[in-house]
Length: 179
Length: 131
Image (cartoon, rainbow over all chains, first blue to last red):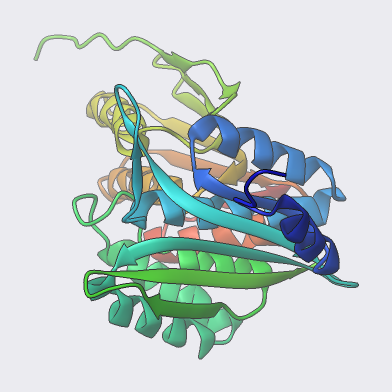
């Protein structure tokens, strides 16, 4: 081997050791997104498949709406994000990561903290309130994606923000879904 | 007032990169169906199309029978769905004859819960029908 470069074997070993089902880093294009989501849904029984699919869709849309890292193509740009799905005996773990503007970090963490402090009925109410308040101008979504993720998965959101530099941070979110 | 003519609104459902729900809004009978999965490239544009049609239909003062049968919709779409429900409720308050049915898969409690929350938000008395 001439140059070590990226060590695929190390990468393979790590993903094997952690029971990784899917690992992706790159532009989140609609084509990749649609194929992956359908594939994932079809791998489970309808009930679990529906939940996994709904969580997957909202997490991916979260990357598309908020990633601060873009890849320029000839006529358009795509958001860069990372996605890892691992399996544990009773659960699937979805983890998504993307760069965000550091300025958004406190609000994002606060939102997740609020979500994690609520029970199911409170989450439903919180979602309804946020949905009514959201306006189309503010964001591309209804601003309730992460609330929906917690509701559908019926488990807390594990979030982390790591500083990259003064302007950017790396945001990761993980959620477990019962198989 | 001149008679308004309103065409049916028909949109073919698609499940490719995006998921487009099937739309069949009948201007003669007032029977409207919205079915399938909703994850769209331009959510606002899509739902504006539906609410604009409904606004025109409502001006005709005819009965409306609206049927939702959605197996998946993302949170952005849920905002569009709520806009439809608000319109229907407003028409009902204004004396319009409105029937709204929400069909959900019998084993999908998340879908059922969404429908309950839509009822709470819009105050429109939808019939929840398991299939």
